[in-house]
Length: 105
Ligand SMILES: [Zn+2]
Image (cartoon, protein in one colour):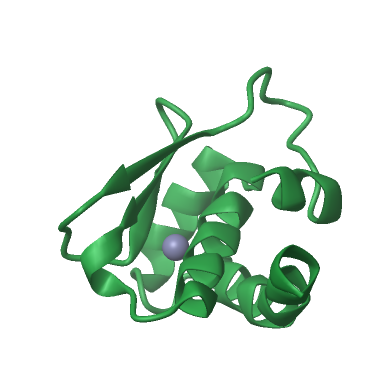
């Protein structure tokens, strides 16, 4: 989270950092709650640290996005083709190796 803050940056419209919650079991890798500003990570959906990093960066990206825009796009394109989902995945893919390197090597 500190890494995300430094490298990906903050959402200036939000007054608080997102809260990170770990869950043992879930259906998805993670999610971001726009209402309560909570990033959830579901441990059973991950096999490596890199995958966990991917999820956290992905959800951090949602924290930076606009809730209204997200739901507008969701309505238009559906979950899988939502450009903001694609943006979150691209960002995670772009930064995950650097993050792992910075944190663990
Ligand atoms: Zn997402």
